Image 1 (cartoon, rainbow, N blue to C red):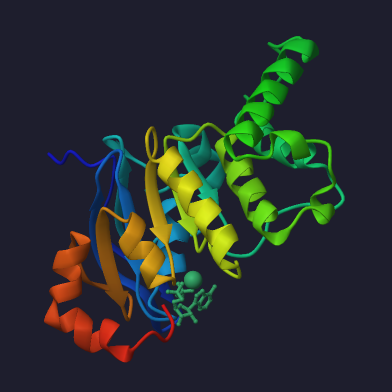
Image 2 (cartoon, rainbow, N blue to C red; image 1 turned 180 degrees about the vertical axis):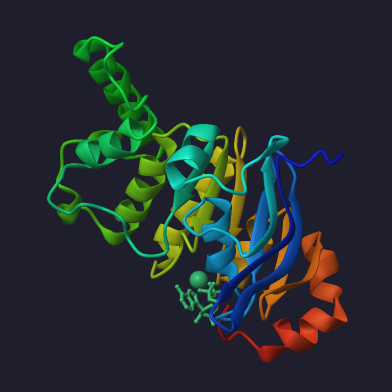
Length: 252
Ligand SMILES: Nc1ncnc2c1ncn2[C@@H]1O[C@H](COP(=O)(O)OP(=O)(O)O)[C@@H](O)[C@H]1O
Ligand SMILES: [Mg+2]
């Protein structure tokens, strides 16, 4: 048996004739920050989509806390404790930060509210949303419309929306995308903070950020895992240098 919180075995996803994810076997250790890097089109986002149930695999299995979750829907993986943030923004700009978070928090409530008095469900959801916003440094922006906060704050809001579902494991697809240095630094601090009591699985372009934060690194290329290991070990790997890191600082 493995001590992983999340693991895949021989996981593949085909889009027609294209093998986007090709026999991927990875173990994600509990409480670690595990980054997935690789060139554009390597299959990173597809892998995340499989892990959270947005896509169903063509082959292979996924286990979360020793439970087979291969066939679960996004709603079910969220209930199981897997949170997911998207590469493209998922925010409703006309809603306040609190309302945006609320939508996330609500997704974990039982489908039928009939066993709850409305006030109970309401209070619970609101408290969870407020907690998530506080954690992400948006406590004072709660009632501001999402359209009015900065780009960096919008990414913080997306993380808050995910946290409002109270996940144990966070799947983050390029959380630093399009950010300035200061905004990126703030998100990195937040991720480090969250890593104290969550497992983080992170796709990221920015190699400096990856090497500053990741405890485990997987390099993907052409749908396959080239190597998984400690960042320094991966940096020294010849196959990785040739396929990827050797390309200079272009793209991830
Ligand atoms: N829904 C889809 N339908 C068809 N092809 C897709 C789809 N999603 C991704 N692909 C293809 O799968 C490959 C992997 O894409 P993706 O997982 O987005 O890579 P990455 O996130 O590493 O850049 C690419 O060739 C991409 O064009
Ligand atoms: Mg991607």
